[in-house]
Image (cartoon, rainbow, N blue to C red):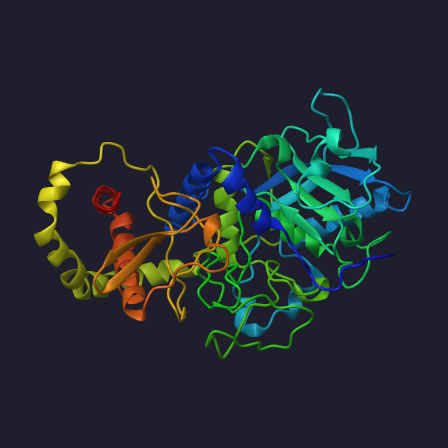
Length: 459
């Protein structure tokens, strides 16, 4: 087969940036979704769904040649792989190094080919479309019949998977929650789908689809999409900070960003390693996916009893001890430096110009431990009225403070000094404590008032 990919490539971030630029309301939707995910991370174990979630899947096979018209056996092999991977029941999960084995998560998600089509008729969950297109790109043409692809089934009832020939070595891409329903779903090249038929090494074990559905459930790349800057964030606390993506089959430990002795969690499904090397989701990633099922994906799937391994909502996540053990220090040591002084200088202005409408969701960005150069989010959420097409800076004489980034930041977003990074860490530490007691509202209002003052003074 020609043009077989040799290194993993995923266009999800590229699609995300395109939607930020072109789709009205997408940035606001992403803000709300990230706020909901943030609150879920602060209150782990409070998921809304019990047991497992069974998601109906429709596979749209878009083919130019007979070889691209993949078999039912190849499709079913992919469904079986997903069911193992998303329950942590894949045989190769045993290869996770002991340093990370306690973090392996069971997402409590299962998949099945749809048995009923949108009109209520029986179906095998597969559509087949002949096309004249010799290789699709990430521009979503494969999702439109008018452009040689196949139209989506209702995205609030089905997970749409498009399987086709992707050009340029692209393995797949997904659409984050919050995008247009007509293009919602996952696209995978046919040589990276399942483990039989046209599936080809080193992407012949179905992990491309596992990876892309992770994006569909609001997971980000594990390194945070910041190039190799050690400042990106996937918004998951139990995945180590790492510099860029890993490829091939790394050897443990693979150390970057001063994250020794255990190094990168390169065996995670959201890295870029070969299929044979990616074998796990973390428990923090599971919480984030469950937050998506409780929020933007709440209409899809049905509850079903879990069979086999289950580390579901009853298990105590690692953050519980973190939140429980530290608040005394946070409250005791930090407020003097960053709450007292600003209040002396600013309350008159704040009272004069109160903010009538506050965002439903608190700010979301917070740093991973180990970040060397500050916070960096090339495609991340935006807060309140901030322009989603670029970073916004609040400049004081000694402290540049980036409070939002978007598509325009690309891979060159603003970095703060170590002092600014430390200050922001302290701020979020206290915010987290307040949030656990339902007292975060006043802090959110202060952030909004500061933004209003900045816009008034800087035009």
